[in-house]
Length: 214
Image (cartoon, rainbow, N blue to C red; front, side, top):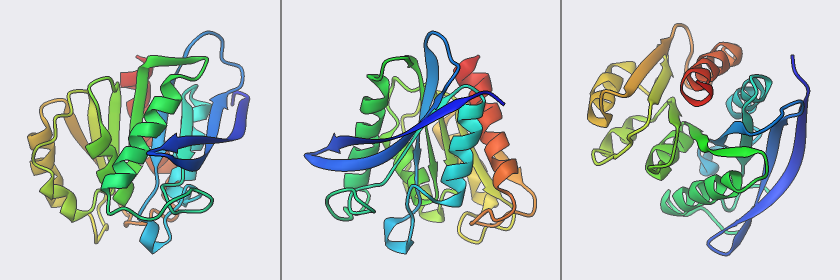
């Protein structure tokens, strides 16, 4: 396990100051890849300390990939209030911009990951510069995103006991995104991933190793 460094940070989104935590590979030399990780729904207790978000960030940084988790507007010490998804999309875009300009980050190897509500936000915030996208437990209303123009490798991952992200709907969404989109189903896991965090985090990290580290 390599050494890592963790620091509290802030950045701005549409004039609001948002709080976050940056995880960096402590022993990295030269440029390293990085990812923004988006948390679940703010109105249902979702924040950057969520079990899935924390596990994914830890696995990424141990693999040599910097990870930025942050609180959407109105959550924790982040300014503002819940904005129905549109403002949160701007927050994710601002997090990507912040991450890309950090010293040591290879801006050509930056990805985004989202969980539940954060998965919808991540897909909506995906831009043409991203190296990879992962949507974890995408809620069923995520199927109402037919005009996605994601051109980088994309992973949709859910548990086979997820009552909010039915796995039988993932193939259609993957097909709508394109041939660069794949799916992963983890047996036994429900929407909250209790006791399956490590398996999920390893699945996501392997995907990023392949498409971001190369």
